[in-house]
Image (tube, rainbow, N blue to C red):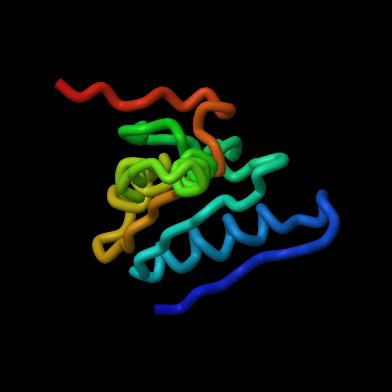
Length: 120
């Protein structure tokens, strides 16, 4: 497993764009890609058209909800329930026979207007 971090002290330097391009390239090469948006102040990954939710997460809490549950000593939600598959994942499955996986853990899906998936 390879972990890559895109970091900068300043905003507006292209960090999210670089992350999105590398993630899309790796997924097109058949890699399994899991993106975590740690930008709690101004999350932007889920605002990019290709990285918007194709299927909404079960819980809209995102990374922030996970961290707050841990701080409050509440049971932690499963990471899988906080993640979603972006639209790009659907495009990859139609255009590449050996596409990879692409999932996103947003900073806080509630702020982005991503509704929770309804379960019966």
